[in-house]
Length: 142
Image (cartoon, rainbow, N blue to C red; front, side, top):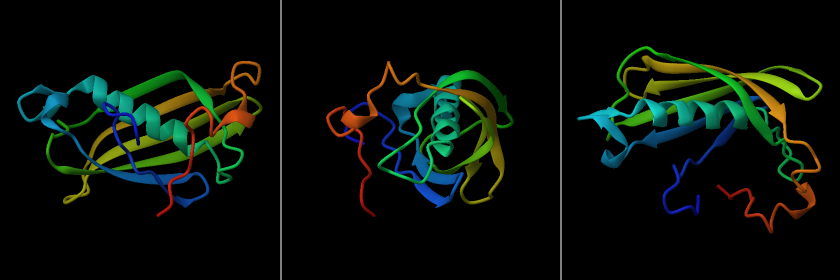
């Protein structure tokens, strides 16, 4: 949220394993006039699919790397219009988890793009979760 060039996504957990956010892409993220760049579409799907696996405990979130992301670009994703993005956690076995994310037109509810992902836990020796606040991680109040 505080990254000046970040996506500024306000992610809401609807239920365990199901998250949602709204996003309106600024013009500087367009690839073609009026169309969100495909790399930004993929970044949104990657972020939301991974976040769906974080869990509901803000004191002990699950941080993961993306091992694989398959994106299906169904329609052009517009800039400057409100989008609804959903993320759903899938199967989880050990250090590996599956997830899905979809970008929808918020008015028509049409699915514009979707991604299926495979995520792997960040090894504990690479990320000290006892220092989350110091590393900038926090849960923002409603």
